[in-house]
Length: 156
Image (cartoon, rainbow, N blue to C red; front, top):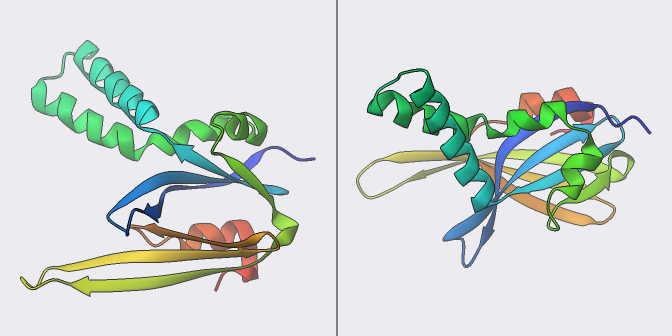
């Protein structure tokens, strides 16, 4: 089994509690397997703490430290690039793996909403169809190109 990571799609969200809140995940793909890894509050807090400490150690001021925290959260998924899929899978009991051979299609749908103030919000819905069932996630960026690199023509 080839355990080298060939693609990472960060910040995918699964709605819970009437769509008001969500859990965040990272999709981690090897040529054989896809791991869906939960991003826990503790993990994010550690990234924020580490980013702030690094900026402070570099002599940066308050606003630079604050900016480092934000970019640290956005770069969180990069840590998986140096891991094996098995290590990522073992990281949390909520993590799970799907054999890529069982994924029949991945649909990416752009959703645009406008509120009463005319503010438009765009999200992308990601629907993974596999032998084990259908998985639905949302994200704030278009993941289609990343997914096509990993899964080829199965991405619609």
